[in-house]
Image (cartoon, rainbow, N blue to C red; front, side):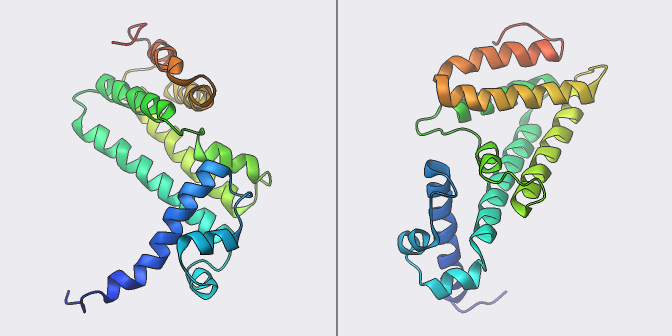
Length: 196
């Protein structure tokens, strides 16, 4: 495709700047705490540009959450591609969750945080959160089945609960959550009882 140099890039830069700004601020301070005027100022765009890309703040919130969802799905796919066995994929998943829950500046799961700010289960933001969690639960069901678990759906539900707990525990307690998560996840799938 032949494009005029700089044209496509310049049309996407304001949107990307807004998404980067929103991602940073929403995660660090909370969605409701960050107003549109601040997003516009820190994103370096005009009000008209903001509303051209995102007709409402909720549209920006959805784009932020979909970006997080896409990144997690891509990480999961990459792990699946390099894992030599379902058990190795479980180890990669545990390591990824532990790494996420223990980095400096971690404030918990962006989906759990957003759900706390959008209590209406029928709101579009909550539906997007539900779609992410449904995908994650299905991915874990497949992983549990591949590991030979007799009740993959039940195991996946437990693993989701463990991941949610690790996200909160990582925020409150830091790295201590890592070994406990590994032991519990391996116990759920009937594997070795400790991390390696």
